[in-house]
Amino acid sequence: MGYVQRTKWFAIVLKNIKLEQLVFIHIFRFVGVFFFLVYFYNAIPKEFAFIGGAGDIITAILVFPVVIALKKGYSFAKLVTSIWNIIGLIDIILVLITAVVLTNEAVQNNTEAVEQFGTFPFSWIPAFAPATIIFLHILVFKKLKEL
Image 1 (tube, rainbow, N blue to C red):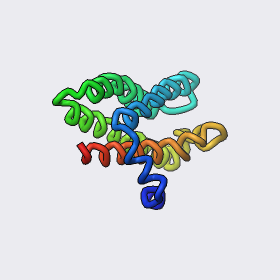
Image 2: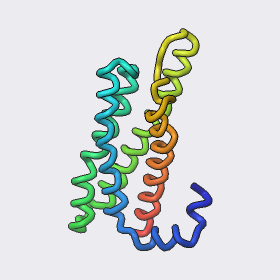
Image 3: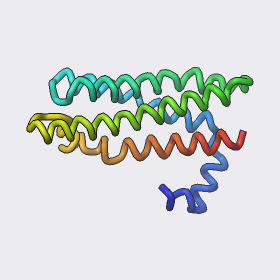
Image 4: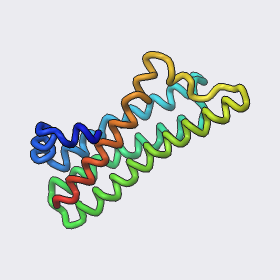
């Protein structure tokens, strides 16, 4: 992440991308529905499914009012965007903490936890999603400073 932020192309992209575009990217977090589907098939614990799924879905739903506020230039747009960004960032941190705690408990009790995410194709999720989401939230904070 640090390397990417120091490149010339990144500076150009960050300068030219609009804040509402950075927020709208998070629409992909509707993928949180899949946490519930995987839970439905008993492949992940309920706690992980609900924390990961609900947080992503809420973050994705809230994209719409935040983008509208930004596009219309409402006076509260910066505040709403900051609150949304904090909610989305806390969500991904809670997902990571929950995964670590459940995995630790599973190892100690010789039970199953989130090991399904260690198998292909599910392994792509923990490999790239958390880092990408955190990176995008950091970019939103950077753009908010410009307002």
